[in-house]
Image 1: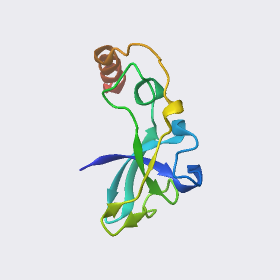
Image 2: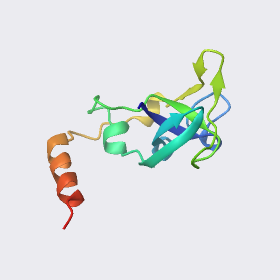
Image 3: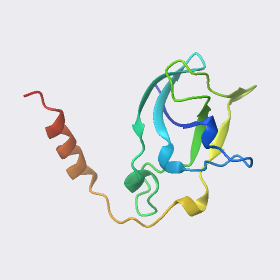
Length: 110
């Protein structure tokens, strides 16, 4: 299963760039359609010049953020759009281990 950065078609400018990168989501595509979607990206990790591990750079295009919505294809694969350089900022260090521990605590069944 490949998890992709997905942008809604209405969030793309005429030059092929994402208008609002905070409105990008993680998604799984199967048979040319959105199979599942998560919430919006976290700018502290995805748009942070100080955190290079998981920066959003390119996105596949979904017609809508709805399950089974088609994604854009061309002959050799997905159609990609890009996040503009000016969308990234220096947002400081991100302690991934602390975030993971906090997330795991919140996910525990009580």
